[in-house]
Image (cartoon, rainbow, N blue to C red; front, side):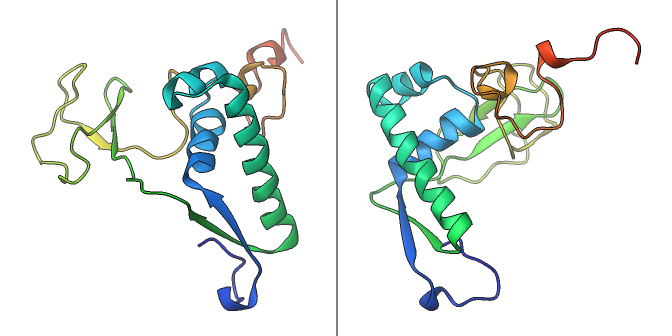
Length: 153
């Protein structure tokens, strides 16, 4: 449950975000995949991804703006364990999420043992809205490629 600090969850209205909605948000908003790429990963149509995202974003906005508790539920799921290579930047999901990472674990791309658990947005995926897509609604601090300053200031 995600809720405003200092207020008991019992005293708040709850908004439920389904696992499908969380996964759509993760793929499109966090990983930067296009609706088409997310649809292929989820095995649904592009239009379905759009509808699920609209619903999920509305629920998240309602929760944040109106001080409600956000509860994630609605299905059986597992949390993927994703690793990042500190040497080459590759990302991969562990095949057996129940097994903890071993000390000798190596990057499948470059073989480096300088790996860690990934945190934050993915890399090497679709451009998403932050890289010059139609939305231009990115809150990151770096400019999109077409917004970069040219020449001297």
